[in-house]
Structure formats: C-alpha cells, structure tokens
Length: 425
Image (tube, rainbow, N blue to C red; front, side, top):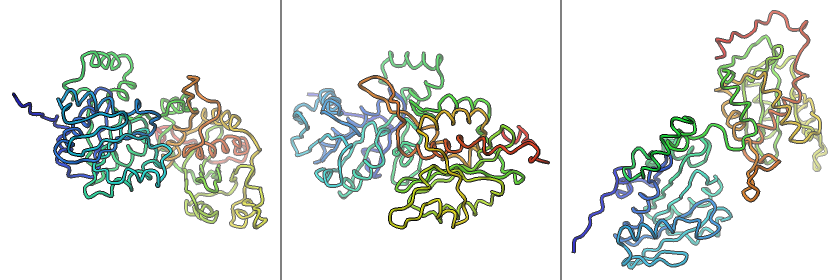
C-alpha cells in the first residue's frame, strides 16, 4: 500500500511549528483558511493527544459549527479509520477529542468545562465580541503550550480580533493574510465571480475578496452623509482657530462612556476640531480635560442632555450643579427621542468639517452607529443599536440640536478669516 505524504500550504506551516500562542488567518473569500486550519487540527490530533475546542460567537446547533467541514476533511485525508465522528464531537483513537461550542452566553464559570484545551479554533472571528474573548481566553491559555487560532474575513477595523490581533503587531501572534489569489485550489467559478466583482464594484471586491475591512458598518445610519463628506474632502485636517469660541456637545454616561465633541462655527460652517471619550471617570476629570485642551470657551457653550439636571438620590445634587461648581456651565437640551437627534445630525452633516486625526475615535463611532438587522423579518429594526458607538453619536446629536445657538450674529464675528480650503483638504 502506498502511503500519502501530506504537504501543507506554505501559509499554514507555522501552525505545525507551534512557536506562537496566537495565529490569525485573515483575508477574503476563497482563500482556503478554514480548510488549512481543519487539516492541521486533524493531523495534529493523530500525532499526539489533543483536546481541541472549535468555537464561534453564535452556535445554536451543531449544524452551525465547523463539524461538517472537519468530517469532510477526515474523508478527504483518509483518516476515517482513526477518527469517530459522533453527533456533537469527534474522537480519535489515541484520546484526541474535538468539541464545538458557541461563545455567546457563556460565563467565566460555564466556559470552565473547556479548560485544558490544547488547540482552540475560533472561526468567523470577526464577529466575536470583546466580552466573549475576555471569557474564553483566560480559560484556554491555562495549558502548558496553548494554541489559539483565529480565522476571519474582516468586517470592520474596530472588530476586537482584527484590532487586537491582526493590526496590533503582537509578538505572541503570527498573522497571515491569505486570499483566493494565493489558493491554488480555489474553484474556477469563485475566481470568475471575484474577477467580475473586481470590474463591476472595486470597493466591494476589496472587502469581499481581498479581506479589506469596511469603513462603514452595514445598516450604518449616517452612511450616505459620511460618504458624501469624504467625497467632498470634509474629513481632513481642521485647525483650531483661536479667534473663534469652542462649543462642546456631550453624552454623559454613568456606567457607560462619556463622549465630548469640540466644535467651532464660522457662518454655516461647523468645524469639529476634537473629540474625547472616557469611561468610569468622575466629572472633575472631564472638567480638567476641557482645560488641558487649551481651547477658548469664552462665548461658547457646553451642550448636555436633559438628564444632567436630575438630582442624585443620595446627595440631592444634580450633575449640572456639580459641573457648574467645577466651572463647566451646562446648557441643557430638550427631552427628545433618538429619531430627532438623528434628523438633526443629518442636517448638521451638510455643513460639517471633521478633523480626521483628532476626531478619529468619534468618526469610528459615527461609522458604526447603526440599526440592528432583524434576520427573521429580513429588514433593519427601527431603533439604533445601543453599544460602544452610540455615545459619540448621541453627543454629536446633542451638538446638532444646538447648532442654531452656536451661530453668532454676523456683527459679532469680526476679523476672522475664512479657513482656506487647501488647509482643510
């Protein structure tokens, strides 16, 4: 009988050397990432006793796992005599065990059943949230030489795995980008489809087939406004003008982050020159930040949501009063719903210029402020998603609702040169 020697593709050889704790394989459709990792896991399980955990963010049934792929690769590699595939797990003759789970809903206690995993494969890792990583990783790194493998088609640059493992240049993470162009086994039908999209929709081609993350999330509320601002060169470098007062728009959090936009107005032109965000800090911290920025607020206002006037039940003092004692005089907004803020924000976008560097975090939030998608109905829900991106969006909305209060009469704006477009583009 002739023995077949398996030769892994160059991109997957580092897995077999096991010199790193983390391995991140990212790229577009058709790159063969899942096949390469599945083959490695199955072959590693024949060479030694491995305890393998295959997981993803959501797995409502075993059908949503990579078990079907592993079963197919067992047959393709001729390993049917070694592995026994049961309903919810795969067992090797030497004691190797492969399990499958969804991460969503697990707690630090419930995930303990997977302690001792020698190999952890996180498939579709772009959809894994930070909480899931915080629950999973401390559990699976307790073995002597744990190996954690991410495979992902990047969605957004802010996705936790992409930001923390692909982009961060960690010394303990081996990162490999692999696309259909590097996969000699990519079916010709996929290659043809990729080439059609490359001609018809280059931007979508870069995301779907080359694995470039999207700048703006699906369902993003301000997609059209942001795209227009970029096309018109209004997301650029915006200098602080000491001749103009600075206004701020806030979303004031308690357990959530507090977000602050810094703006200057000249005529109808609203210039967003800065953005700040923090979590778990006292009000004195934000008052100090205002001072450290070195901006002149004389003639400006600080616009905060209506709930800042509510009195604290324990002290009887409102946050408005606390800020006033710190030298921050709040102008309180009306009690309005999210759709009012969204509409006001859309109007503001028409005349806004945003500093790309100092407002980078705020821009990321605006790009990801979105409506949730209802899978059953096949449509986006009405209410915006309340997550890490919504605080900056709410602060932006507070500023938008107050824009008329920021526009000084023309007679009061003297000797202020209009910003040259060349300095903004």
